[in-house]
Length: 211
Image 1 (tube, helix red, strand yellow):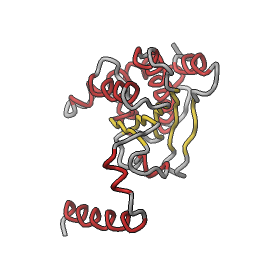
Image 2 (tube, rainbow, N blue to C red; image 1 turned 135 degrees about the horizontal axis):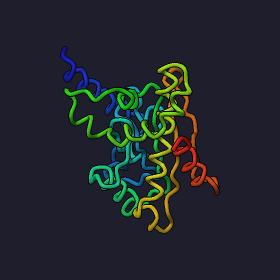
Image 3 (cartoon, rainbow, N blue to C red; image 1 turned 90 degrees about the vertical axis):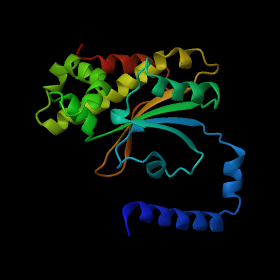
Image 4 (tube, rainbow, N blue to C red; image 1 turned 60 degrees about the vertical axis):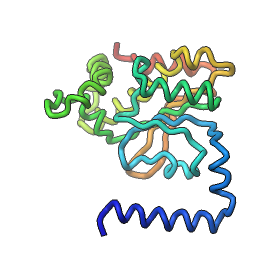
């Protein structure tokens, strides 16, 4: 059986099991979505938002891209934020990065001529890495540098989101959080929480600590 067929067979099994466990599940999905969280995560196949948070379909409004980046001028990410905040009225925006991120590692290396689209996408992350070069070089191993940049990248995206007019003009404005996922134990670490009164200042300072 080929890979796509396996996925289709698994889908049939999932639909059957889900309907048996909760007969009203698909009826509720048809009625519409009412997620309370916009999740901005990495496209890495090892970090599926719903799985690592034990959420069901309809719980999260999800946007994933390489290295969990938010570009205010990019219609892809900005339209997701706009719809989530202005139409779905989400109360929370979570940026979730992960340790061992390939996109973050690429930002510390010379651009790969065979990946022009990736190079353009991670250009802001490369610029951030250059700004933080002194702090990153304080870490002995490549893994430590990659993981620290992964953390600082999350904080930078949180800062950008909090500064977005879409967020600032919302009433009430959603709380923006920064999390990071560890592949080695499956746990999520909170880097910055929108519940903390002085969090915006802390986030900005941390993200630009080596500027």
